[in-house]
Image (cartoon, rainbow, N blue to C red; front, side, top):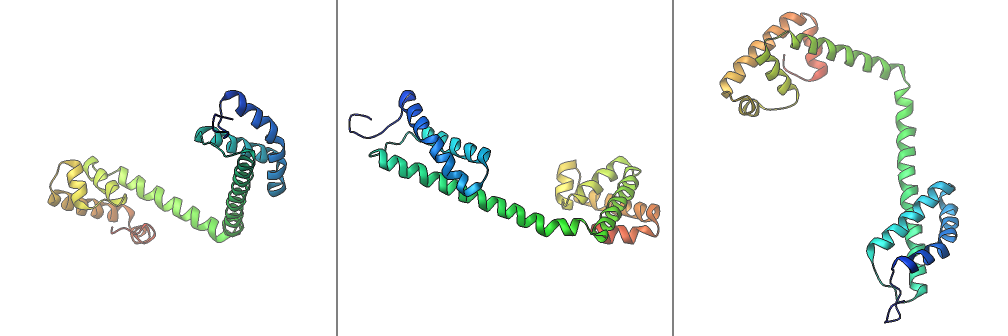
Length: 183
């Protein structure tokens, strides 16, 4: 306690309050979480925040209310995070396990590999322009980055796409459709 009769913390009294309330708060948190390690971590975080705040408390009852409310709120936040994670897994795992999802992923990877292999065979300046374009950059942004004019970028992009159509042949349309680009 300080001169006003309020509770403030220094190294010696903080440790005594920690020792006094830690086990009880872990037990309280564990009723929510049913995980002793997680409960201990959570209570330690509450005490760390308490130490960082350097607040004063009117009396020990006010301090207890703060500690128990903080633990409860952190437990509820933890449970919400777990629920969101669990809901995500429940929704996505069945989708990830389907044959259709697997085939889509294989096709997408093969199409990307084929496209990037063909891009790597272009002259260096055209490779760069096409890669920037695939990243979503506009012609003016590409021109600025490369120190060129917008007309140079447009013409080089046109020649690059023409070469890609020739190299990819019948696959060009499929690649453009799957990757949403204008080849």
